[in-house]
Length: 143
Image (cartoon, rainbow, N blue to C red):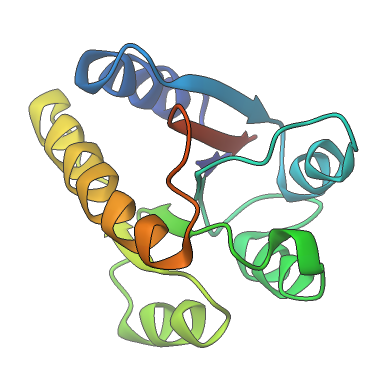
């Protein structure tokens, strides 16, 4: 999840724990910090990255462009999780490699539903890629 709003991060984290308490959750301050975290050799790659579009230093689109250049991150599904409803944003992030686009819900149960959908669909996507081999992890980059 890439998000510059602390309240959104907290609500997402709480919803994620409600949906699946076994998920190992990580977060970074922005797209640049997330790239630095993902570059660490000892870090296990996440099963998913939830990413906001509007952030300082490195926004979501810049982040997507950067990870597409990094061979070890190409197989990590990125879910854009943003307030945007703009069709151009949806098309652009798809071209940049995002696997799903979620306009942020504001009701807790709806956030849980969106996360549950992504995790179930994500397992299907990860299984096709041969990545669904261990505990589910979600990495989030936040501002």
